[in-house]
Image (tube, rainbow, N blue to C red):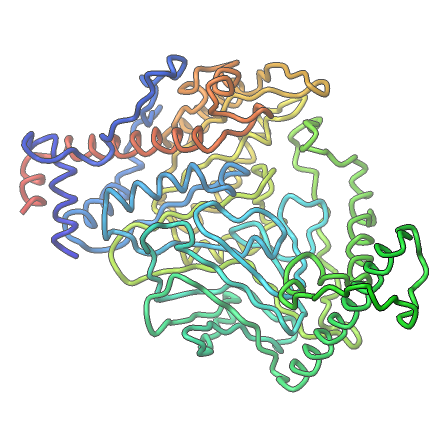
Length: 554
């Protein structure tokens, strides 16, 4: 391992050794076709100097030159980050150009159980019925943490699985330690890690509401089952649910078959099985299909409950504010933080009469003991800065304290600025509050603000107009950087400024919604950011005193 990192050091210092291979970050990015991109702005800008980056740079030096310690990076945003394409591209470069220097995948989550997209860099699967709560919803019913999302289940069959190397041609990840953040309302459910068909029980850390697992070998597939303390009750209810749903699915298959055979697709009354013609084939029902989805297959009672919940306005009506359909291009009136109704006094499901044991999961931190870099992306589709405030995510600092980032990249803002009346003062005040939460965990954290991308807003079904808030937000980011002595990666300026999103779309880099990018666009932005941050670090190396450089190279 040490010789690998020594090689990294030599590569990093290639500016001082012209005969050495190309340095990390100096890979070729072909943007000759994109004359609208301003590469002269692809640098980390420091309005008040980079003294606040000394702690981060020093940890990088210790890792690179001495093969000691770990460097942790946190990238926070909205839908761009939940998709994990920009952040995934940066992580990919770190792994490929710093081979062997990964200290773990960082925070991960079973997004599929929440019925939303899993980051593109890994896959997730689940069994059983799960409820979901996330920080962009009006009604917040669960105490959320760093990731801004939670899933909970009382299904005795529930499991989650994360496939970290699902999309890697060769395995990259080999995690040895896991910290699962979650809790059981009545302490009657415990999570277990399954490795090689063996159940591994974790150590409960009640202060942080987390379970610590140690794997007997490095793993890239994380399978978590949930064991009830009353194992007989769990087995009994699990069998009852499976048998009932299987019989119900057979009955419905018969009903669908007879309707198809008789042409009576409008029939509402149950079909008498005795009247089914002998020549009607009854389809096989796959048991596996019962273990995925918002509700189990053909579980009409569950579907009705979910539908009723989605129509509930008891909490949201208190806000006296209509919901915004972002998918249709609608925008908020303002970016004021008055969008949540916190149900702090809600009665836990598991203490209700005849309720089943329930477990709530808010995140999984994967780690190794090896020196290296860990890069975690945090993002929820539609998230704004105030969606990470204490009243919405009360467990934020507690979970962050186990990651303690050395560098935080803030990319929240595109949803804040997608409003009719953008209050930039409120925007900066919101960021001040969020930064204060992070500095409680690490007062010396280095910060980079990533300005918003240019975007358009929809005014009619197929008509878009330029959205000037992107430039207003850009100025706010620079003001924040000046106040907090942070860096800025000016994505808005690099793209080409106001109206540039239309050019990115024409070049097949952006989507037709004129807000999000295509895979090629996200990858290009990831390449540009990685080049900028590595060049920033190389400048730090170049400015070291000659004596210190010689000492570190030894």
